[in-house]
Length: 160
Image (tube, rainbow, N blue to C red; front, top):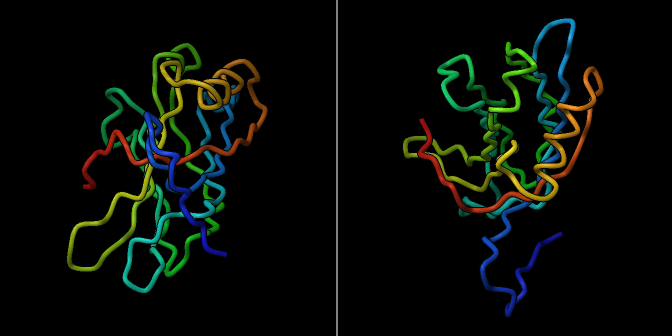
């Protein structure tokens, strides 16, 4: 199925680049935030073959350094990758409210820099569903909460 962008929908909204299914859970036993990257759908095609080779980068900010960054495996030639990967961050529950979870989806390219497909941020500075998801995670400890989020092409951070 091809996603076709509709003309006349421009405006203040950033361009939609697909959707991502994320799960969040704060484990009180482990004192960790467990972040699940489940899957993406309708990603923007970045390669000449009409596909992308997507992977997801997650970064818990600010000041978590290397411990706050992780990425999924690369899924070749797909716009609807299934990741089913979980990452955990050692963090006190009281600290979590001050953090932002930066989620970005990239297209892996051999020999040149990877293309930014889109991303979103979850945290107290987020809005709408993204804020609601974060808030539910903080409120319902030890309960895994899954939500779909729209990826947009903004707050672009260079890939490392």
